[in-house]
Image (cartoon, rainbow, N blue to C red; front, side, top):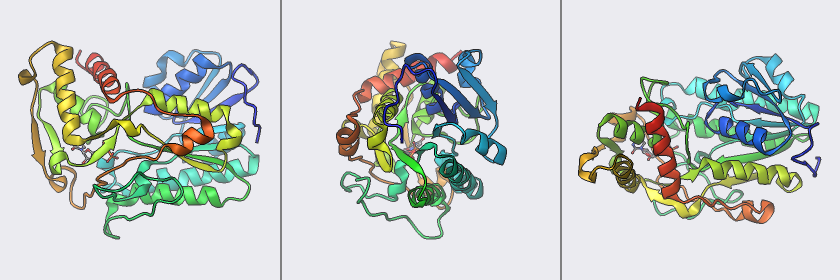
Length: 347
Ligand code: UDP
């Protein structure tokens, strides 16, 4: 593995699969701004990256990894970041086969091709591989925390099990240079979608609450909103990737939690915070913004819905091996996200 990736080396090209998605669009922008590298980007969607399409250092292919030719083309580049995935919990029950194709079959094909070509594959997995964590569970350690999923028949865990199998496959491929990234609830501009405008179904909680606030509808607290998450700014996530690029030697063959353990909050507390940020953005009393309503998980998502009640990352490994620590506070991350959402959708 090349241990000295220089950001001013204009001979480097990185392939970013899923460059048009939430994380991918931020990563693409950062690579073009902070380095002299070229980017070969693949996605079916390009609306978030319109401003870069004419950049001479960016080559865009509208495609996905279902096509073997695309897999072969991507694996010719020395660094491959794979962000492409179906990753909205609202789809895990009804679309298990598509979820498994996108989170296991496609990355597996890419891993095989990268093992052959010698490329470094940086694969985005999920914090959900830690399974159905309890409300009092300890912080999740990359290499030692045991996994418990819900009922063996529940499609809810289709995503987590597909991601986990991919992780095991990558680690088992003798010739592959791999790094696994496990995101902990990244938030920021362009996260998910607004139902009925640029997507259908139920987005993740931040986009859902933002939609409700923009539309003047109540914020739905699934099963009372007791579950806890560590919401992490996407800008911290991008800084993590740059630390990884800069310390390739320490990052290869490792899985990393990427999250902000200081930003832990329950979903009910998140709703409170977002209502108060919304009131301050609109300059109205908090009583004038929509309230909350408790709904059952099964009524909201469908039969078989199950949840991880706490996702607290251990962040020691990223700090000791790569010198990375997330810095952006919960309030700043949520405020940036909501301001962007209001500006983008409340036309
Ligand atoms: N949730 C909620 N209201 C919503 C959407 C989600 O209470 O409108 C809850 C969900 O049940 C889970 C948490 O928020 O406990 C985070 O869900 P999300 O879909 O953002 O993704 P996850 O972190 O579970 O992958």
